[in-house]
Length: 139
Image (cartoon, rainbow, N blue to C red; front, top):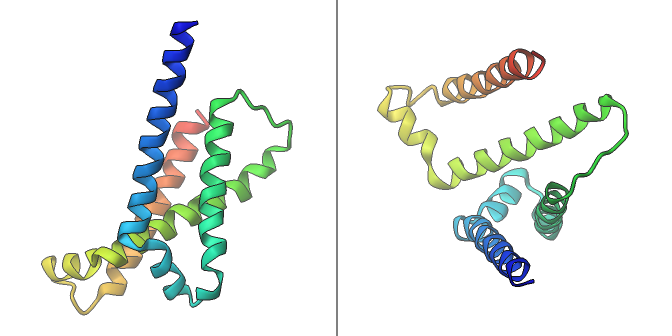
């Protein structure tokens, strides 16, 4: 009984710490407002916020359970694409807020060709993800 209570307190404490860190990361850096500004969808800022909250809660709940969805493997394609879009937009918003690309472009001498730098990073990420998926996951 005491052991279960201690485990419950530890689990809730860890979840609160991670959740607080995630919210602080998004709030302090202003990633969601900047994302709505870049995509010109400022009127949907509450939809972005609720999507992130519900996605975090749902994925956390699913991660804690031994959930089996007896669906076709074709569902993995849109789920993977949506996860990739989320991570890509989050990374793009973060680098936009921190001005990482202009600083990197100046340091490596590509100040005028920042588009080339961005495309190299995007294509490298795509090729790396495909290689990982095709080589490591399917073998």
